Image (tube, rainbow, N blue to C red; front, side, top):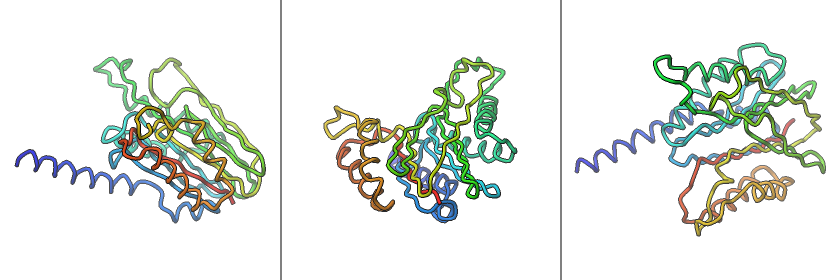
Length: 260
């Protein structure tokens, strides 16, 4: 009886935490104001998790980020809340390059875990994140990435983009590391796809093979000309059919965006 009560209490707390975490994420109306169209496939492994997405606008410039924090469940969710909080802080600064926002974010992240009473070298909490800015008037597009990657489809051109290969936080090999800003020419109606590692790492029903990066990129390429709603339905169907009865192995996030 005591065990059942403890389980019920934990489940209730988890559901409440899920409500809070979901409340911190951008709503459909925020995407509708910023982009022509989009879809959001967001499946935490344990109701809450370490994946999060973030969206804001400063004058004519839209800023969007997708991040994947260490772990999942409660620990991952705590890091995601930290990531959202730090993004909201650093975006108030007026940097001309989006890479500078990640550099500042990295400094604040490291400061958070810098416990002078312990050896901070043993702390390996990290966050992979891709951040882009898009000026809706000039169409200037910048991005910076800490260990992540994303895809841009425009016209018949399909490109995968990466940034720095080290994350936010983690083992501090570089004392003063900086994140590189990249500029990309964007055509009207370009479609962008951002994803965490969860979908790639999902095992199949026989628990023998991972979904993999190639299969994910092929699915995005195959359906990218369809409506965003149809893309969402088909990719979710493919993922669920691949996973079938196998437990989900990580937080899963895939977001498709069509720029105005």
